[in-house]
Length: 398
Image (tube, rainbow, N blue to C red; front, top):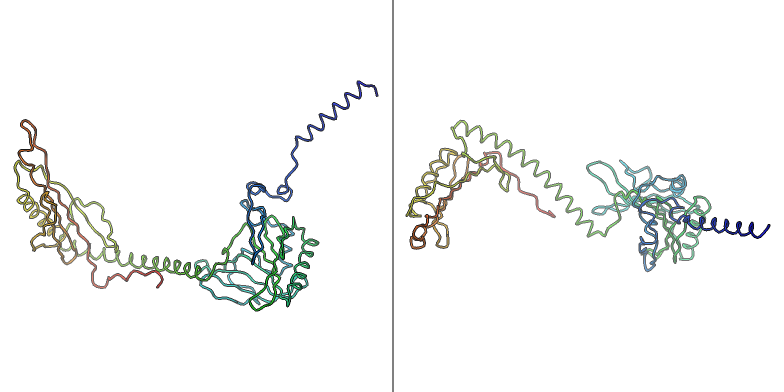
């Protein structure tokens, strides 16, 4: 090879090397099969905390994912080999052999004796009963074996780890003191050794579906009780609202029928009826008078409007107000009269407000007198007919 040929070969090799460097090597997450948001392995880190003091950082994808994934054959085989129920699944009833082990305000653990990975122990699952769908929702499932010493429990944990490594194609083991996380794309599989209150040591394999949370994670009993109270209160309110609306619809029909028989047309200009706080129908009509005459007396004008609206109320709703109106405080700026009455079908209130006439000395010569009007409002609320009494509103926590 002459010098010119050699230099060409070296240049070609350099170009090839540069092209090769330009192609980015796939990340670990990409090699494992993650996608989208779950590829941010360097920035999305989660602090893994295990009882009593084991902590470390792991990529967020190890414990939870944002994207959706299908189960792999290895993941399905692992669930079957562990002898656990499919985590996150819902069951109309638990399979034969499962017994309820706890009865807490919101959650319940169900379990049964099994033998998995050559170890005798117990499988269980966290669950919550959905009263609407009539199913038990689950979340994490587990297999636990029990030992007299920590060393025996650690040996059991190592045996399960070996079985997973040899037969179920774990993507990666994240190992810590007395525990590990076997990474899969969809399943979160965690092994941990811990001591029970009775002194026994447990080797627990916890399996959770990262794409399907199911009934969620266990909460302390006081938090469960608060959750149960809120749920029961919401359920009671829904039932109460349904019962109240049924009673009110029946009452509105009865009142409307009797009002028609008595020739009561309702308040003119009231618009669409609305509801009071307890759900009854309320009509509200309001307005202003024509501009008041020059030099009016607020007291006289208020009484004149008052008598007119009292007559309208009796004709519209059959409510007669015979008592004298009550004078409300206006802080010295006019007259405000109001009164309440009750008839056979409605209870009502009338309000009339008239400002004091502007002092003559405040009107400059040549200026137009300010235009002033009286304001009025009539409210009529249907009464509950006999037999249509409303049930008391449910109270939270009772």
